[in-house]
Length: 126
Image (cartoon, rainbow, N blue to C red; front, side, top):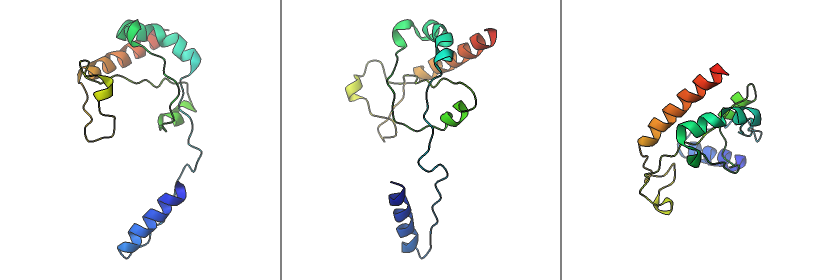
């Protein structure tokens, strides 16, 4: 994949009479983003209280790369997904992220702010 990026950048640059140097700073060693188990156990009651126990779901690992993983190398962290799908729309009919048809239900943003605020307050009190 890295070679493909270099080749494409070089060809695009050549088509404009220029050159391209592609430097991939992390190589193929981008750290995994994962939730610290102890921190998650400590903060799970806050998530249940804020979003409702039925709305807090454990997800299997996904292969996305995220800059947050660099922070997690220094301090334990939690990476959360906050739902933004319109509740009345079936999941199968919902456009994925990073697509032109993606739409977010603003109500999810309120839940996200409330969740982050409660996590901070509860963490500071513990």
